Image (cartoon, rainbow, N blue to C red; front, side, top):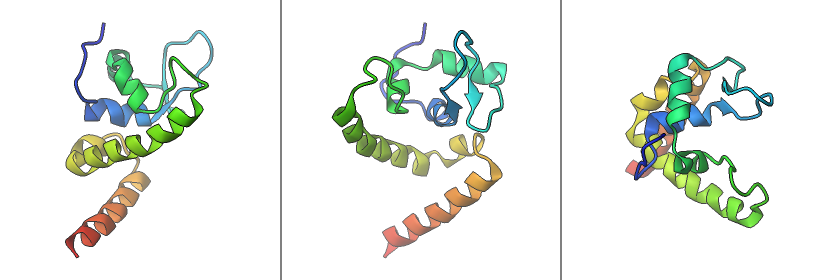
Length: 117
């Protein structure tokens, strides 16, 4: 049983954002967005994720019909991700493809340059 976390853990969030939740019925093995199955370690991380972390990742568990609430959550989720992405770059990098790392670095450069002016 996962232990409650007061804030989403960066390594869990990074994994959940790279998870294809459209998996075949009856399977417990998650896959990455590129189709690779989770390693045993990644599966253990996903199994340990809290309901709050799944919800913070935008996974609709209890109310798949929550329209306006989900739309409002997009902005809040973006703010949350933004704070983790800037402060915990190294935790996220291990889950990124090379192309995503290049894009992250490009966008990070724009954000930090804009913040400095």
